[in-house]
Image 1: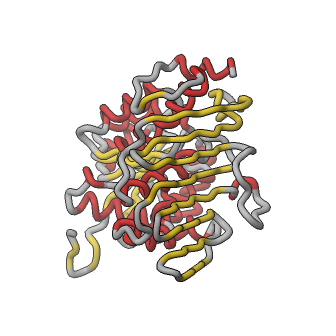
Image 2: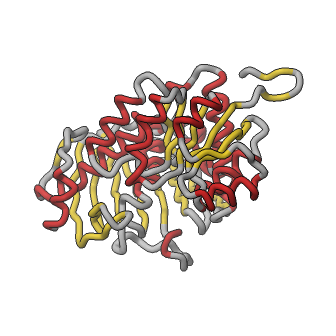
Length: 346
């Protein structure tokens, strides 16, 4: 890590998007001594001015490419709606952005995910699935890598929201847990769906989804929608997320907002989880990890790099294909964009 005697050699960052979520990013960066947030960009002049005044930032732009060329950042943080995101990333790279952080979901159609993987071959595109930096998950990752639960053969992941809304978070968590437990990437999926919602009022997405995923000898049970199991004592619909990892010598259950429980070696532990406090800890931690990865040249190992996120996206589109064809489908797949529009038939 490049640290001088006066402290961290700060990472120069610019931000695109000053909406509510964007302001959470701004707050997180201002908490990081490793990060120097030098400029903001937004198409809405009032929103841009308000954000600049709130956070004491004076370098304000309406043109993203101009900002990148003028400021020469080391990282461009893009917090825009997914309907705009795919159209922004390529111009950002063309303007010279050496690394990007983008929000989830990474793509609304399969071709967008494939395009991002191609764009990320030469430069880092990281995805802001920040939950894995929550304090409790940071405790559990080394434990899983040490196979403290024994041989894992069953995992469960669920959210009461639709799969495009919160699926990227639960898939990121459960598939990282699977990989650390020695399991392969998803090999096949069998899914069923019910009803249709519209993500961002544009893109059809199953209102309810249930799937079984093959991970070698193990199985992942995935639920996204109202039929997902309720989290005990949870009253907020959005917070209805839980992950469970079951091994032959231990079991871990983690909720977004109602704590975690761990059984292993004949003992039991439990602890708290809570939104938004855990998220307020996770977001700065992600930025610090980005700083370390860029400063040490370890971008290719960053845990939410685009090729990893695209595999999660491939599983989601595989669920669509399985539900439409009413059969098991192999993963990864070469899905057509027409797959998304065909959801309206369900």
